[in-house]
Image 1 (tube, rainbow, N blue to C red):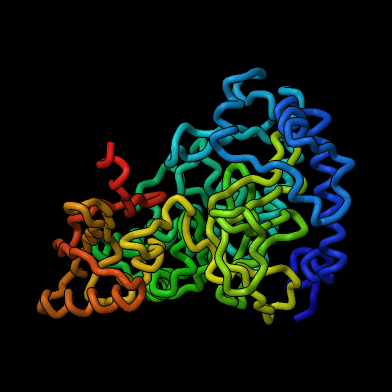
Image 2 (cartoon, rainbow, N blue to C red):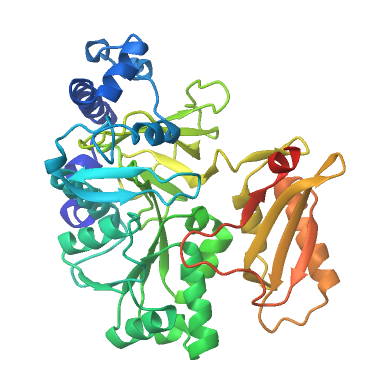
Amino acid sequence: MNKEVQYWNPILETLPREALEKLQLKKFRRIVRWAFDRSTFHRELYERAGVVPEDIRTMEDVRKVPKVEKSMMRTIQRKDPFPYGDALCVHLDEVTEFRQTSGTTGQPVYQPDTWQDWEWWAECWSTLLWAQGYRPHDRVFLPFGYNVFVAFWAGHYACEKIGCEVVPGGVLDTRARILKIQELRATAMMATPTYVLGMADAARTGLAIDPARDLQITKITCAGEPGALVPATKRRMEEAWGAKVFDHAGATEIGAWGFECSHQPGGLHVNEPMFLAEVEDPDTGEPVTEPGKTGKLVITALDRIAQPCIRFDAKDMVEVSDIQCSCGRTLRIFKGGVIGRADDITKVKGVLLAPSAIEDVVRSMAELSDEYEVVIDKKGDYDRILLRVELAEGVGADIKEIQAKLATELRVKTNLGYDIEFHRYGALPRYDVKARRFKDLRDKEAH
């Protein structure tokens, strides 16, 4: 396959590292200058840190620029111009798109975009979808509610840009979506891992449709949760649908910064021509560059102008790697994608616990359904991890045997012990978008 067919933008996706970093530095200096000149928030932030755009001469100088956190954006919104505040770098008349964060970690943050920004979103998504094999012949079904959240809005427009046929399934319920996929012989779709598994379950149990046998979906792009790069969850989705499942990472405030390509190297490519991704120690703030080390993502959207995202603390945990993908892209890869949120990776009994590790164990066992819940609380003076799981539909095996197997696998994978509750199939909550399966109640109990 030649470059023009394999890559959406063959020049940018295969730039030598030296040229790529030169481009990133040029763009970073440009967006810092733009924000400094046009945003009261950014100018005051930089002046308090004693930084002016002229100070940024090398990649090492990037760290002189202060970071921005989501809590700061919430404060900004209380100022004029309404409703965005003084981080806005364009006149309100230039804003053509409104989105907001899901609010799962607090008050939603409003995100304005110009039409140029929205074209940039579509270009980022076109890069990732083309890398995952989307082509003009595909009929792409989008089974999500077209809400105020960005969700797969940009995926919709990118599909059109590529030339795919788009079928919006926003107001349909799950049953109607499955039937429409069958009726139109859709070949691709996009959803959260939770909903991908939920649709497959609904198809089998409610409609007697086996997605892998009766539908023609060949590829699925996931976002919103880490599941598509959790091995057991990816395997469940691919087996349920008979399709390739690909991961993507992004956020309303940031954009579509990472993607898994069709070669599936075990991690996410960073779309580096569009983003500058730094990894730092969550405790010390020092750069993390050694392969195999995990750190917190600090990211800059290099071309977004209405409300710039400059050195944004994404709070996503990623693992630095030196993986060279066989696809030929020179873009860095974060092994395992987004491993979890810095807020969710917590210390229990002196051991760091990532929820994705529990997910991988639960979904590796055929005796258990897709659903589970994790609650961390106090039992006396000690931390307790309560894991609620469901038996798979029709499973009649000895629960003691399943419990022993599950406890052993959890101990091996996480080095921790668990109180395990078994529930009948269908007893635990189902989610259509982002699931809320992990709860740490220890701080609440302390108050």
